[in-house]
Image 1 (cartoon, rainbow, N blue to C red):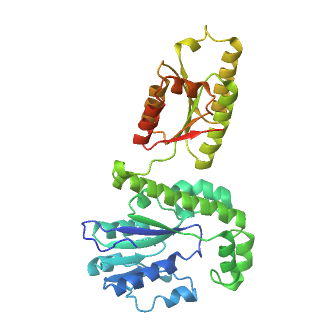
Image 2: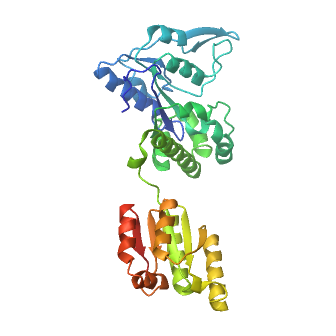
Length: 364
């Protein structure tokens, strides 16, 4: 649970995000509100929407509510969040549901996320909730997935202001089961929902978008707040090859699979010594080497060809420059390995990479 009580000029902002309605965002916000109340925190509800769900509605009991502002609009009496009342009361924490909501004409701000920005600027901590399909940058992608245009959207920058984003995650099966048992919509809407929005393949794609957004936020937070020396380095592989084309092909393919598994960038390095220059090696070796470079590029690698007599130093230097986490080489009969042993500096290679916490993998 984020500390919503730390004193600062700007309020802290926590957002619960989900792949769709019914995953439990409002329920979790109210659970957190009760936990904060038990700690003696002055928390109030600025706006909440339970959608008539009994389990969620029951959690309203005991939490102070700021009365909504009544507006007479187009012959109807409507209600909106009373931003000025919240500013006057100035609670430590306020709950504001439905972040993407569009305010009634005549309100100070056209969007609720703008109201939230005003509350944060006033030093009030805010807990809010939104579905992934309301994010502006996701608009076209979500419409492609669901076939439904989303008119109420929030700009990505409002999530960038969040101190914490929490994904409320369910499997497609769990969400559909909640729908069928009446925990999301009333019975008259269930059949239509199952035929349209609530289809497993659509839910799965929206779930992926929500998870990616939270992961993106986390990486941004790490970049900003975690000292460089404490960060976990992302995986990056370096495949070292020689003119031994059969072994080189194995090293390239196996490193490609490792990189694919970790979804990581990877590099193929060939260190060309003077006795391996074009006019000194056989044409078939040159052809195999070029074919291996092409294979590496096709499999997504960055290919480096560097002229040097010191193979070990070159590997170590490139690994450091490219922030490599794992160096991959072939079995001991590989020419590269023989060079390392013959020059009696294999121990230096191991020492160098151990100092940079780089792994060495010998591929069979």
